[in-house]
Image (cartoon, rainbow, N blue to C red; front, side):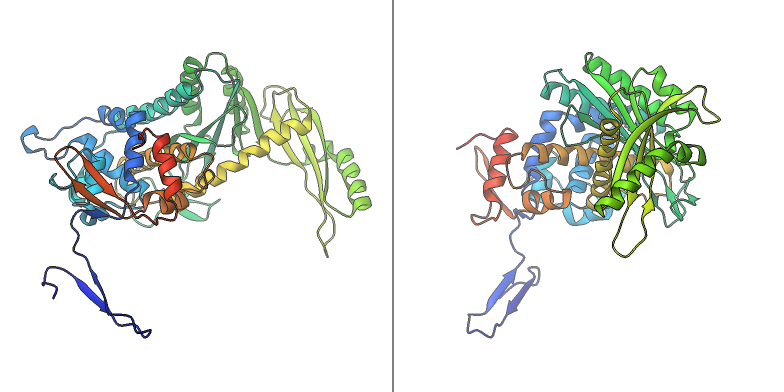
Length: 457
């Protein structure tokens, strides 16, 4: 018989099996066995240690039970495992793997922080501390890739992209945004691509009021990243890719002052469409002959009314032909200081489209939009912790190269490598994590564990 304190249910099946009893009675067990992989990665990066060093602890030293580093680790590892809200702390307080992740004994160690403690932690952050922590996160990411690439990179591409963060309460600085048709914040996300690699590595997120323009805060963020990248990779060429919201003369002059390559989308207008007329006619002829969508590339020197001088604009003259519909002209324009052929430049610009996948992972896999604190700076801190969790998961994916998880999305990585049942056994000399022998992704898990520093045997 189960005691009153041990939940138990019994299943009676129709296929003549014995009754199946399910009990929640194993104290040293967890469903997040993959947290040890994240801890190993964090130990390598030193990320939570460096971020915690940026935060000022104003609490009474005699009453502190959870250090700033422990609170930060608890929150970041929890986010990575899918626990997106501080309310989840009540369910994880005694989880042995999460205690192990913050550096406590998984069996006899003290319980983790409660939801009220985590909420006070998030609301206590000052703008200055958050600024230091944001710069530290970017510096940690850049230093890690410098070590990975031995300080050598031919080209580093910086992508800046705003995204919407809908709000549904009385949060500070949330405003109605007509473009997204919602009350929201408007975070600015920065990623780095090294050489011709596919992955775009998150390096910074800045939370902004919902009525911000695309360029708000972007020039300061760009200057900071450029300085850090040039110190780490003095021989690399830096390239910036942004969409049409950044096409103003002020932003273009910032890019030119920073001496970086740039590829910037430009909104269509009557003058540019007129310049594209000959190319559109050529594309129309090709489309009529082939019966399919066709496009032709070209360039022109152009200056909008607000621009200080003429700049090279790439033209993509496209005629879209779909079954049952009339052909449609679809010209696209990009301003650049690159000297490559128009087709090559436009292909480089199109590669920034993969940023949308990073934004989807942040929103759908890590609940970037859980900015439900009343204070703006508390929400900025939540966004920063989400970014740190994503940095760990991106590195986990990189370490899973040549496995079935090499290109997995965040939710798939979590399902295959983190959400793994484990029983913790403690002896005098060591801790043993007993994982399911028939785990579907056990081989991949072992290979990743070896890649992040585990030893065989």
